[in-house]
Length: 366
Ligand SMILES: [Zn+2]
Image 1 (cartoon, rainbow, N blue to C red):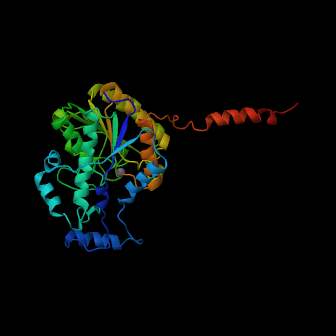
Image 2 (image 1 turned 135 degrees about the horizontal axis):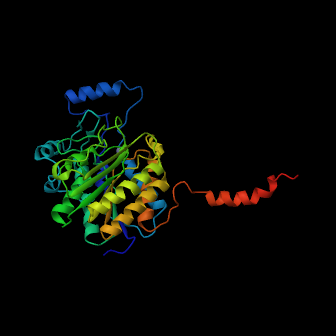
Image 3 (image 1 turned 30 degrees about the horizontal axis):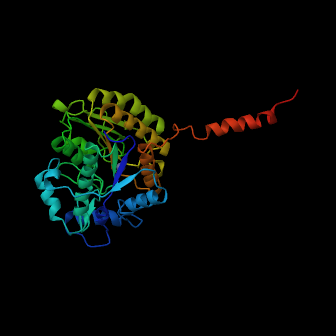
Protein backbone atom coordinates (compact mmCIF):
# COMPACT_ATOMS: atom_id res chain seq x y z
CA UNK A 1 0.00 0.00 0.00
CA UNK A 2 1.21 3.50 -0.81
CA UNK A 3 2.43 5.93 1.83
CA UNK A 4 -0.42 7.84 3.51
CA UNK A 5 -0.80 11.35 2.09
CA UNK A 6 1.48 10.69 -0.90
CA UNK A 7 0.14 12.63 -3.91
CA UNK A 8 1.24 12.81 -7.54
CA UNK A 9 -0.03 15.55 -9.84
CA UNK A 10 -0.10 14.56 -13.51
CA UNK A 11 0.42 17.34 -16.02
CA UNK A 12 1.36 17.28 -19.71
CA UNK A 13 1.92 20.46 -21.70
CA UNK A 14 0.39 18.96 -24.84
CA UNK A 15 -3.05 19.73 -23.36
CA UNK A 16 -2.29 23.43 -23.90
CA UNK A 17 -2.44 23.06 -27.70
CA UNK A 18 -6.25 22.90 -27.58
CA UNK A 19 -6.96 26.54 -28.29
CA UNK A 20 -10.10 27.25 -30.32
CA UNK A 21 -10.46 30.85 -31.46
CA UNK A 22 -13.51 32.16 -33.30
CA UNK A 23 -11.25 34.74 -35.02
CA UNK A 24 -10.02 32.18 -37.55
CA UNK A 25 -12.07 30.48 -40.32
CA UNK A 26 -13.71 27.23 -39.24
CA UNK A 27 -14.81 24.32 -41.42
CA UNK A 28 -17.74 25.83 -43.35
CA UNK A 29 -21.24 24.44 -43.05
CA UNK A 30 -24.59 24.76 -41.31
CA UNK A 31 -23.13 24.52 -37.79
CA UNK A 32 -20.62 27.29 -38.53
CA UNK A 33 -23.38 29.53 -39.92
CA UNK A 34 -25.61 28.91 -36.91
CA UNK A 35 -22.91 29.59 -34.33
CA UNK A 36 -21.55 32.67 -36.15
CA UNK A 37 -25.08 34.09 -36.12
CA UNK A 38 -25.40 33.34 -32.41
CA UNK A 39 -22.03 34.91 -31.58
CA UNK A 40 -22.69 38.03 -33.66
CA UNK A 41 -25.94 38.57 -31.77
CA UNK A 42 -23.94 38.94 -28.55
CA UNK A 43 -23.13 42.52 -27.66
CA UNK A 44 -19.67 41.63 -26.36
CA UNK A 45 -16.69 39.96 -28.06
CA UNK A 46 -16.75 36.21 -27.46
CA UNK A 47 -13.69 34.17 -26.51
CA UNK A 48 -13.55 30.43 -25.95
CA UNK A 49 -14.13 30.06 -22.19
CA UNK A 50 -12.19 26.83 -21.76
CA UNK A 51 -8.67 28.09 -22.57
CA UNK A 52 -5.03 27.07 -21.77
CA UNK A 53 -4.72 29.83 -19.14
CA UNK A 54 -6.82 27.66 -16.84
CA UNK A 55 -4.00 25.14 -16.50
CA UNK A 56 -1.06 27.55 -16.65
CA UNK A 57 -2.61 29.53 -13.77
CA UNK A 58 -2.91 26.37 -11.66
CA UNK A 59 0.70 25.43 -12.43
CA UNK A 60 1.86 28.94 -11.57
CA UNK A 61 0.09 28.92 -8.19
CA UNK A 62 1.61 25.52 -7.35
CA UNK A 63 5.05 26.96 -8.15
CA UNK A 64 4.72 30.11 -6.06
CA UNK A 65 2.88 28.37 -3.20
CA UNK A 66 4.11 24.76 -3.37
CA UNK A 67 2.20 22.02 -1.54
CA UNK A 68 4.77 20.21 0.67
CA UNK A 69 5.49 16.69 -0.55
CA UNK A 70 3.62 17.04 -3.84
CA UNK A 71 5.24 15.17 -6.75
CA UNK A 72 4.76 15.91 -10.46
CA UNK A 73 4.73 13.47 -13.37
CA UNK A 74 3.96 13.95 -17.04
CA UNK A 75 1.07 12.26 -18.81
CA UNK A 76 0.52 10.17 -21.92
CA UNK A 77 -1.86 9.94 -24.87
CA UNK A 78 -4.78 7.50 -24.71
CA UNK A 79 -4.92 4.85 -27.43
CA UNK A 80 -7.88 4.37 -29.75
CA UNK A 81 -8.63 1.12 -27.94
CA UNK A 82 -8.73 2.88 -24.55
CA UNK A 83 -11.04 5.61 -25.91
CA UNK A 84 -13.15 2.96 -27.64
CA UNK A 85 -14.19 1.49 -24.30
CA UNK A 86 -16.56 4.44 -23.81
CA UNK A 87 -16.96 6.07 -27.27
CA UNK A 88 -18.27 4.52 -30.49
CA UNK A 89 -15.87 3.87 -33.36
CA UNK A 90 -17.87 6.18 -35.67
CA UNK A 91 -17.57 9.04 -33.15
CA UNK A 92 -13.82 8.45 -32.81
CA UNK A 93 -13.41 8.35 -36.61
CA UNK A 94 -15.26 11.68 -36.88
CA UNK A 95 -13.10 13.31 -34.19
CA UNK A 96 -9.82 11.97 -35.62
CA UNK A 97 -10.72 13.41 -39.06
CA UNK A 98 -10.65 16.87 -37.47
CA UNK A 99 -6.96 16.63 -36.55
CA UNK A 100 -5.20 19.82 -37.73
CA UNK A 101 -8.46 21.70 -38.37
CA UNK A 102 -10.65 24.39 -36.81
CA UNK A 103 -14.23 23.20 -36.47
CA UNK A 104 -17.35 23.48 -34.34
CA UNK A 105 -18.49 20.20 -32.79
CA UNK A 106 -21.78 21.18 -31.18
CA UNK A 107 -24.16 24.10 -31.27
CA UNK A 108 -23.30 24.79 -27.61
CA UNK A 109 -20.05 26.32 -29.07
CA UNK A 110 -17.80 23.32 -28.37
CA UNK A 111 -14.94 23.59 -30.89
CA UNK A 112 -11.54 22.23 -31.93
CA UNK A 113 -8.33 23.91 -33.09
CA UNK A 114 -5.46 22.17 -34.97
CA UNK A 115 -3.90 20.79 -31.75
CA UNK A 116 -7.12 19.79 -30.02
CA UNK A 117 -7.31 16.12 -30.95
CA UNK A 118 -3.87 15.39 -29.54
CA UNK A 119 -4.71 17.47 -26.44
CA UNK A 120 -7.89 15.44 -25.92
CA UNK A 121 -6.00 12.14 -26.36
CA UNK A 122 -3.47 13.35 -23.79
CA UNK A 123 -6.20 14.51 -21.38
CA UNK A 124 -7.78 11.04 -21.43
CA UNK A 125 -4.41 9.25 -21.33
CA UNK A 126 -3.14 11.38 -18.45
CA UNK A 127 -6.27 10.47 -16.47
CA UNK A 128 -5.37 6.81 -17.14
CA UNK A 129 -1.78 7.48 -16.00
CA UNK A 130 -3.10 8.88 -12.71
CA UNK A 131 -5.27 5.80 -12.15
CA UNK A 132 -2.37 3.46 -12.96
CA UNK A 133 -0.09 5.19 -10.45
CA UNK A 134 -2.68 4.80 -7.70
CA UNK A 135 -3.64 1.20 -8.52
CA UNK A 136 0.05 0.22 -8.75
CA UNK A 137 0.49 1.61 -5.23
CA UNK A 138 3.06 4.24 -6.26
CA UNK A 139 0.97 6.93 -4.56
CA UNK A 140 -2.10 7.03 -2.34
CA UNK A 141 -3.84 9.71 -4.40
CA UNK A 142 -3.34 11.51 -7.71
CA UNK A 143 -4.69 14.54 -9.54
CA UNK A 144 -4.82 14.66 -13.36
CA UNK A 145 -4.62 18.34 -14.34
CA UNK A 146 -6.12 18.01 -17.80
CA UNK A 147 -8.18 19.79 -20.45
CA UNK A 148 -10.34 19.75 -22.48
CA UNK A 149 -12.65 18.54 -19.70
CA UNK A 150 -14.65 15.37 -20.22
CA UNK A 151 -17.85 14.81 -18.25
CA UNK A 152 -20.28 16.21 -20.88
CA UNK A 153 -18.84 14.00 -23.67
CA UNK A 154 -21.30 11.23 -24.52
CA UNK A 155 -20.55 7.93 -26.30
CA UNK A 156 -21.42 9.52 -29.66
CA UNK A 157 -21.24 13.27 -29.07
CA UNK A 158 -18.78 15.99 -27.99
CA UNK A 159 -20.51 18.62 -25.87
CA UNK A 160 -19.96 21.29 -23.25
CA UNK A 161 -16.28 21.95 -24.19
CA UNK A 162 -15.64 18.18 -23.76
CA UNK A 163 -14.25 15.91 -26.51
CA UNK A 164 -13.47 12.61 -24.81
CA UNK A 165 -14.89 11.63 -21.42
CA UNK A 166 -11.63 11.52 -19.45
CA UNK A 167 -12.98 10.22 -16.14
CA UNK A 168 -15.05 7.55 -17.91
CA UNK A 169 -12.04 6.44 -19.98
CA UNK A 170 -10.06 6.18 -16.72
CA UNK A 171 -12.80 4.19 -14.95
CA UNK A 172 -13.20 1.83 -17.91
CA UNK A 173 -9.43 1.30 -18.00
CA UNK A 174 -9.36 0.49 -14.28
CA UNK A 175 -12.04 -2.16 -14.84
CA UNK A 176 -10.73 -3.61 -18.12
CA UNK A 177 -6.97 -3.54 -17.58
CA UNK A 178 -6.13 -3.01 -13.91
CA UNK A 179 -8.30 -5.55 -12.13
CA UNK A 180 -10.64 -3.12 -10.38
CA UNK A 181 -14.10 -4.57 -9.82
CA UNK A 182 -16.18 -1.60 -8.69
CA UNK A 183 -15.35 2.03 -9.43
CA UNK A 184 -17.13 4.96 -7.79
CA UNK A 185 -17.14 8.25 -9.72
CA UNK A 186 -18.07 11.32 -7.67
CA UNK A 187 -18.80 14.38 -9.85
CA UNK A 188 -18.92 17.67 -7.94
CA UNK A 189 -18.64 19.96 -10.99
CA UNK A 190 -21.54 22.45 -10.87
CA UNK A 191 -22.88 21.05 -14.17
CA UNK A 192 -24.43 17.59 -14.38
CA UNK A 193 -22.04 15.00 -15.88
CA UNK A 194 -24.52 13.87 -18.53
CA UNK A 195 -21.88 12.03 -20.57
CA UNK A 196 -20.53 10.00 -17.66
CA UNK A 197 -24.10 9.13 -16.67
CA UNK A 198 -24.93 7.97 -20.21
CA UNK A 199 -21.81 5.82 -20.48
CA UNK A 200 -22.44 3.91 -17.24
CA UNK A 201 -26.27 4.16 -17.23
CA UNK A 202 -26.79 0.38 -17.27
CA UNK A 203 -23.49 -0.64 -15.66
CA UNK A 204 -23.75 -2.03 -12.10
CA UNK A 205 -19.95 -1.95 -11.60
CA UNK A 206 -19.47 1.80 -11.97
CA UNK A 207 -21.45 4.00 -9.61
CA UNK A 208 -21.87 7.60 -10.80
CA UNK A 209 -22.69 10.00 -7.95
CA UNK A 210 -23.38 13.52 -9.20
CA UNK A 211 -24.15 16.68 -7.19
CA UNK A 212 -24.94 19.70 -9.40
CA UNK A 213 -27.13 22.70 -10.02
CA UNK A 214 -30.55 21.47 -11.11
CA UNK A 215 -32.18 21.79 -14.53
CA UNK A 216 -32.80 24.10 -16.41
CA UNK A 217 -29.13 24.87 -15.71
CA UNK A 218 -26.82 23.37 -18.38
CA UNK A 219 -26.97 20.57 -19.53
CA UNK A 220 -30.52 20.09 -18.18
CA UNK A 221 -30.22 16.44 -17.11
CA UNK A 222 -29.46 14.88 -13.71
CA UNK A 223 -32.92 14.74 -12.13
CA UNK A 224 -33.42 12.92 -8.85
CA UNK A 225 -35.38 10.12 -10.55
CA UNK A 226 -32.53 9.34 -12.99
CA UNK A 227 -31.12 6.26 -11.23
CA UNK A 228 -29.93 4.02 -14.09
CA UNK A 229 -31.61 1.08 -15.78
CA UNK A 230 -31.51 -2.73 -15.81
CA UNK A 231 -28.62 -4.16 -13.82
CA UNK A 232 -27.41 -0.59 -13.37
CA UNK A 233 -30.55 0.59 -11.60
CA UNK A 234 -29.41 2.18 -8.35
CA UNK A 235 -25.80 2.85 -9.34
CA UNK A 236 -26.59 6.27 -10.79
CA UNK A 237 -27.23 8.78 -8.00
CA UNK A 238 -28.16 12.39 -8.74
CA UNK A 239 -28.47 15.19 -6.22
CA UNK A 240 -29.77 18.30 -8.05
CA UNK A 241 -29.64 21.46 -5.95
CA UNK A 242 -31.04 25.00 -6.32
CA UNK A 243 -28.90 28.00 -7.33
CA UNK A 244 -26.42 29.34 -4.76
CA UNK A 245 -26.46 26.20 -2.58
CA UNK A 246 -23.45 26.25 -0.31
CA UNK A 247 -21.13 24.26 1.92
CA UNK A 248 -23.84 22.97 4.25
CA UNK A 249 -25.96 21.50 1.44
CA UNK A 250 -22.92 19.94 -0.22
CA UNK A 251 -21.56 18.45 3.03
CA UNK A 252 -24.94 17.13 4.10
CA UNK A 253 -25.22 15.49 0.67
CA UNK A 254 -21.83 13.89 1.15
CA UNK A 255 -22.50 12.73 4.73
CA UNK A 256 -26.14 11.64 4.37
CA UNK A 257 -26.19 10.25 0.80
CA UNK A 258 -22.67 9.65 -0.54
CA UNK A 259 -21.23 7.94 2.55
CA UNK A 260 -24.02 5.31 2.84
CA UNK A 261 -24.03 4.86 -0.97
CA UNK A 262 -20.28 4.19 -0.94
CA UNK A 263 -20.58 1.87 2.08
CA UNK A 264 -23.23 -0.10 0.18
CA UNK A 265 -21.36 -0.12 -3.16
CA UNK A 266 -17.92 -0.99 -1.68
CA UNK A 267 -15.75 0.49 -4.44
CA UNK A 268 -12.13 -0.55 -4.86
CA UNK A 269 -11.25 2.78 -6.53
CA UNK A 270 -12.74 6.28 -6.22
CA UNK A 271 -12.49 8.82 -9.05
CA UNK A 272 -13.54 12.43 -8.67
CA UNK A 273 -14.74 14.55 -11.60
CA UNK A 274 -13.54 17.72 -9.94
CA UNK A 275 -14.87 20.98 -11.32
CA UNK A 276 -14.29 24.14 -9.34
CA UNK A 277 -17.27 26.01 -10.79
CA UNK A 278 -19.40 25.47 -7.63
CA UNK A 279 -17.27 28.30 -6.17
CA UNK A 280 -19.19 31.60 -6.03
CA UNK A 281 -16.78 33.31 -8.48
CA UNK A 282 -18.38 31.22 -11.26
CA UNK A 283 -21.79 32.62 -10.26
CA UNK A 284 -23.77 29.38 -9.97
CA UNK A 285 -23.24 27.98 -6.46
CA UNK A 286 -21.67 28.96 -3.18
CA UNK A 287 -19.04 26.37 -2.19
CA UNK A 288 -16.03 27.84 -0.36
CA UNK A 289 -12.42 26.64 -0.38
CA UNK A 290 -13.05 25.16 3.09
CA UNK A 291 -16.08 23.40 1.56
CA UNK A 292 -13.90 21.81 -1.15
CA UNK A 293 -11.43 20.81 1.58
CA UNK A 294 -14.15 19.17 3.69
CA UNK A 295 -15.51 17.24 0.69
CA UNK A 296 -11.96 16.06 -0.07
CA UNK A 297 -11.56 14.86 3.54
CA UNK A 298 -14.75 12.79 3.26
CA UNK A 299 -13.58 11.26 -0.05
CA UNK A 300 -10.18 10.48 1.48
CA UNK A 301 -11.93 8.82 4.44
CA UNK A 302 -14.10 6.73 2.09
CA UNK A 303 -11.11 5.77 -0.06
CA UNK A 304 -9.20 4.63 3.04
CA UNK A 305 -12.22 2.72 4.36
CA UNK A 306 -12.94 0.84 1.11
CA UNK A 307 -10.10 1.17 -1.39
CA UNK A 308 -6.78 1.15 0.47
CA UNK A 309 -6.82 4.94 0.03
CA UNK A 310 -6.95 4.83 -3.79
CA UNK A 311 -8.35 8.19 -4.84
CA UNK A 312 -7.90 9.96 -8.20
CA UNK A 313 -9.06 13.47 -9.10
CA UNK A 314 -9.60 14.45 -12.74
CA UNK A 315 -10.07 18.15 -13.51
CA UNK A 316 -13.38 19.17 -15.09
CA UNK A 317 -14.68 22.78 -15.20
CA UNK A 318 -13.98 25.97 -13.30
CA UNK A 319 -13.57 29.15 -15.30
CA UNK A 320 -12.63 31.90 -12.87
CA UNK A 321 -8.85 31.58 -12.74
CA UNK A 322 -8.49 32.56 -9.09
CA UNK A 323 -11.07 30.15 -7.66
CA UNK A 324 -10.00 27.40 -10.08
CA UNK A 325 -6.34 27.53 -9.08
CA UNK A 326 -7.04 28.05 -5.35
CA UNK A 327 -9.60 25.25 -5.42
CA UNK A 328 -7.15 22.78 -6.96
CA UNK A 329 -4.46 23.78 -4.47
CA UNK A 330 -6.91 23.34 -1.57
CA UNK A 331 -7.67 19.76 -2.66
CA UNK A 332 -3.97 18.93 -3.06
CA UNK A 333 -3.22 20.43 0.37
CA UNK A 334 -5.78 18.11 2.00
CA UNK A 335 -4.64 15.05 0.02
CA UNK A 336 -1.07 15.75 1.16
CA UNK A 337 -2.18 15.70 4.81
CA UNK A 338 -2.85 19.41 5.37
CA UNK A 339 -5.50 20.55 7.81
CA UNK A 340 -8.45 22.75 6.99
CA UNK A 341 -11.04 24.28 9.33
CA UNK A 342 -14.68 23.15 9.32
CA UNK A 343 -16.50 25.39 6.80
CA UNK A 344 -18.01 28.46 8.40
CA UNK A 345 -15.73 28.38 11.46
CA UNK A 346 -12.83 30.53 10.26
CA UNK A 347 -12.30 33.45 12.63
CA UNK A 348 -14.63 32.18 15.36
CA UNK A 349 -11.79 31.68 17.87
CA UNK A 350 -10.67 35.26 17.21
CA UNK A 351 -14.23 36.51 17.74
CA UNK A 352 -14.35 34.68 21.09
CA UNK A 353 -11.17 36.31 22.32
CA UNK A 354 -12.21 39.73 20.96
CA UNK A 355 -15.52 39.39 22.79
CA UNK A 356 -13.67 38.53 26.04
CA UNK A 357 -11.33 41.48 25.47
CA UNK A 358 -14.15 44.00 24.98
CA UNK A 359 -16.60 42.49 27.45
CA UNK A 360 -15.96 44.77 30.39
CA UNK A 361 -16.05 47.94 28.22
CA UNK A 362 -19.75 47.79 27.54
CA UNK A 363 -21.08 46.64 30.92
CA UNK A 364 -23.85 48.90 32.20
CA UNK A 365 -23.07 50.24 35.64
CA UNK A 366 -26.02 50.85 37.89
ZN1 LIG B 1 -18.87 22.66 -15.01
